Image (cartoon, rainbow, N blue to C red; front, side, top):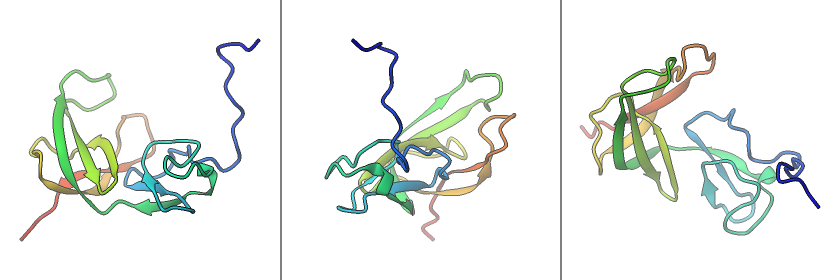
Amino acid sequence: MTDSNDTPPEEPGIATDRDLPADHAFACADCGRRWYYDRRRCPECDRSAGDAATVRLETGAVVATTTVETTPPDVRAPNHLALVRFDEVQLIAQAADGDLSPGDRVRFDGSHRLRDERERTDPRLVAVDNS
């Protein structure tokens, strides 16, 4: 009998390292499938995610937006978020401002701290200038 709190042992090199910059995704070494959120295996071919490469996300399209007004004490308010599709990769990320709308083209830019006490910085979503 196993305890419900038991977790499987970590496999070496597993693609669960969210030390990756926010503007990067994983790419399977076998089939090329891309994904954003941590996982143990490729969703397409089931190869170990430990062999995955990382790729930079270039431009994407906004699917939906929301603004969170009530945030934890160390997170900025309002906190603008967007659901964005970068080809086959879909993710939720912070937007630089609340001016994004569904259909807008965006990219990651800048260097921002999510939490006041956090050393790490990540880019936020900004609209792509089509001029």
